[in-house]
Length: 279
Image 1: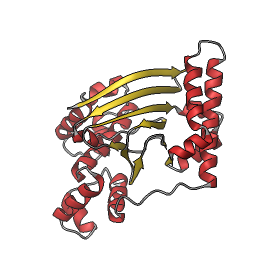
Image 2 (image 1 turned 45 degrees about the vertical axis):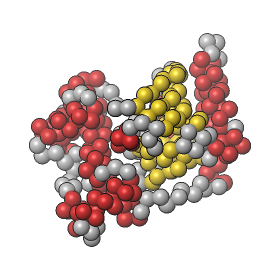
Image 3 (image 1 turned 90 degrees about the horizontal axis):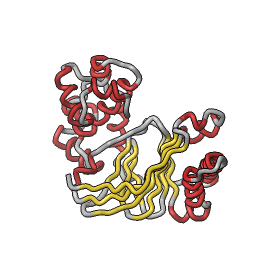
Image 4 (image 1 turned 60 degrees about the horizontal axis):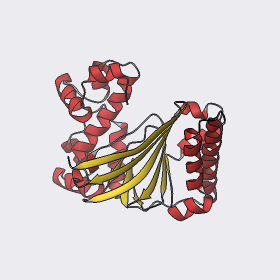
């Protein structure tokens, strides 16, 4: 796959916050098809480059300087053009960071995701606060962690305050019917989700369903269903479930098919993943 990720920096704050700075050089549109979600709350700070960002049933247009905050376990992926380079910082914040800040955490995750445009980022000083978080993590003094935590907390307070004062409109990029299809899939991963069933439910031919979904999301319906199922299976395995339990919970009646799908998506077998406990 013709994609290069240059990891410029990676740092951690007491295991509760990780910061990764990445420069991506991609010339392979298939890289658009990789979905992800995490147990942590995430911040994406797009320093340079333009792309689209798929989050659940919404497609966000992203420009230089924009920030997106994604709640835990929301399925998302980047949608980039061919021959694109873009530079971003990725912050992952565990729920432990919010152990005594339950109300703030509740307000953040209630929204699912938050997009703040580059001009508002600069006006609110959110870019400066994220730099202070990194500076505190890098600082070797006893007060570095405290300063980083304070700056990150202030970042979230400002982000929530901004949304309360001025709701950020999300452009209706994805067709309403496709949004309904995505929500139905997400809520019924343990059920049979074949083209015939879905096309009948949403009153269109299988061919029209395939074309419409692909056109609106940039990925095939089958690929989306498979990715969602494997993501859910990963969480079940990471929490102590068996491979058979995971397969059944995400709609696989044939374990060998689940095994091959899991291996193709993750590069490891369900057993290996369960023992690594990695997401």
